[in-house]
Image (cartoon, rainbow over all chains, first blue to last red; front, side, top):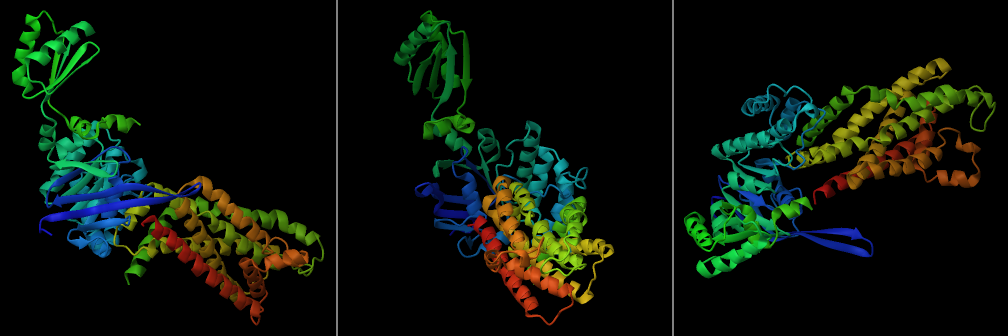
Length: 327
Length: 253
């Protein structure tokens, strides 16, 4: 195993057995995944609800025993050295895990004590994080009175209180308002700058895109593709252009015309709009417009968009991530 | 000993929660106090009942009432654990290096301490009703109540960890506590019961506890029934606690 790999898994699997009517039923939540997370990066684990993100995260944090496969976390063997792993990683679950009837400060001090730190150090570390995450205005109040963003800050401080080298974050910004999300992204980047490796699961394309150095897309318990956001986006091949016309008839004429004239990756008419995927869209656009005009097909509006991670997901799974999220 | 330290930390955290809403410490004393005020006078009116000498109803009734408090006062502590499971607190504890038994130990010890406080208060209230207290017998009885409390609390936590939702927990706990309390001769002595009912009561561990504490209150220390009660409830408490611990470990498997 290479020195700078913080997480390495091979064939990691988890099968849940549920007792259903007529015998036991097996559900394969994670179907054998291989991960390599390098030191110092923000690794995004992107996928829809139920894809196996949280299950994987729970296995890596020793909360669930894998059914098969192997994993090393910070060089420790997941099957045998769980105590060392627990001592050295930080972990924030989707639910957060702050004790709502206690104050934020009590939460932080107890958490530090549970990591074996003495009372004085625990208090010192707690106040350090209160300052770092700007929590002093509310930290002495019971956590149940916190806003979503405040609570999330406390959750992450709880995961970081013992200064771990690796932080596992399960959907850190789900359910937060845009401002709090932006603030948290900033804090997560600062943690990275301070040398912490971050493994985060998310169902948001924009979060994975803006925050992560490397993304693995997981669907139905399997990793579909791994790469940097740019690599993934260019793998989709080309930019997306939409022309809208006055009628579907004109749009179809446009489709026929452009299919003959230019090299297009993909073209499709949807009601009175013409969707096409093309390499180097910005340069091709004027040409396309001129051809349409020359044939009396007048486009009413034009939009050009670069491929998004949503397109990446669509390409590899045949489905849109958003459809899945709504379900 | 990190287990000792972790248990202390968990105990303090749970005790803080209880003391933050102290009214609940008193709410669960309501039932035994109602029995004391509204039911015990009936016993006196019955005249001689097998197992109760006339005029001594209070001496027989109060020890049973304290067992009732030990059963019902701790039976529903599992609900607070469900809150902690839902908000992710238990998972957070499970991924720290803290020794896992401390998560449950800190809770059952808090429950036992609160229970003992309640038992002392009920006993003090009963003294004006003519209760005669043997201080040694009472002190030993408190140990027995603590063991009963630990047993019931562990059952409650065990089921809370299995169900993880409130809906199923309340009926389960009621299904356990009601027959167990009826079959232990708490409200009326089992001497009144037909033979078949007395036979069933013999497999109820808590009927031995009621026997033991009544004997202790009377100051009869030279009685095999006391030892029986302590051994049976002591073993039960340990077994049930281990079962609860198993449920906790299963959460992380």
